[in-house]
Amino acid sequence: MKKLVPAVAIAIALAVGVGVYLDTGVSAAPASTFVLLDGSKKSTDDLKGKVTLVNFWATSCVTCVAEMPKVIATYDKYKDRGYDTLAVAMSYDPPSYVVNFAQTRKLPFKVAIDNTGAVAQAWGDVKLTPTTYIVNKRGEIVKRYVGEPDFAELHRLIEKLLAEA
Image 1 (tube, rainbow, N blue to C red):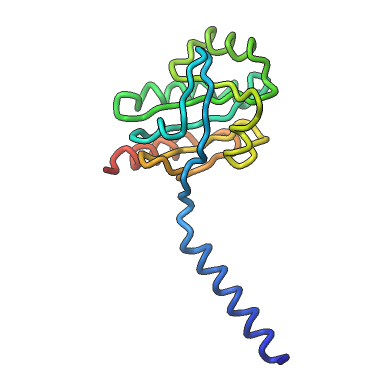
Image 2: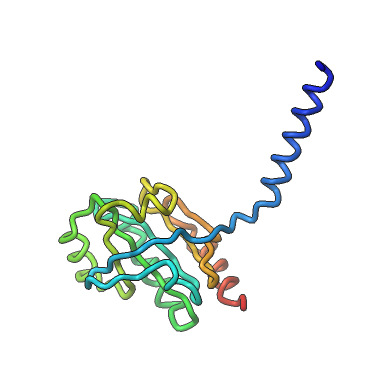
């Protein structure tokens, strides 16, 4: 029996290792309803067919505010090629601040307010901002960034995903 325990432990470790190795990191984006600033709604299903950056942010987050010009530039660079951006303001962000930020910065993409925190919860219990997800044309999350992304790397990923059928 004592000889069997290490063998079982090794077998489990190998199985876990293989599972981690085979995990592509791709998972379906969680079913969510985004309430946009204009009162309209967008669902996760609406993301399909485009490569989409979903950015959880807050007006009180210094890094979020600092990265926003790069998020805008990325949107402007790829929007005509099947790329979209959805900025999701955190539940603690006062809606009037979000509206003011979106208007004064002339955000060219859709902005949602996660009033209840349900969207952040569904997307992996997002607590840290900025947290950014890249969703492929099939509606699968292919990358998550916590903190400001490396925008050169992000652009390479977007190019690759846009080239996919």
